[in-house]
Length: 159
Image (cartoon, rainbow, N blue to C red):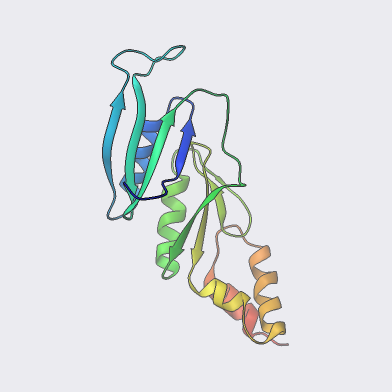
């Protein structure tokens, strides 16, 4: 196991969430499912934990009931090479009831927050020309899914 593993607390959907996530990202798999051997107390699921990998990064999902829920204070950042990747991950992560948020953020159907970000965006937002960076930032702030061509056009539009 890697030194630090993100641990995700689900009500009773750990296995479904892990299977959903591993269907989206390349180099992903279910590593191990730990089963109670019976239904968990107060639940109709038998799975306790699911260890899984997304793009080579390990995660542990726990079925522990509704005591806690995800908030956007913790999110998973998806570094996208280009707009095609942004479009793919955006659509897939929203499948089945996710919700779009502002500036490239979304919440999937399990309540986990994601940032789907084209690699060019941080470069534009930290451009050495502060006016260009500000125009890029203003364009991004008006978007849900990041459309990099529109951000670049805004950054380049000095008029």
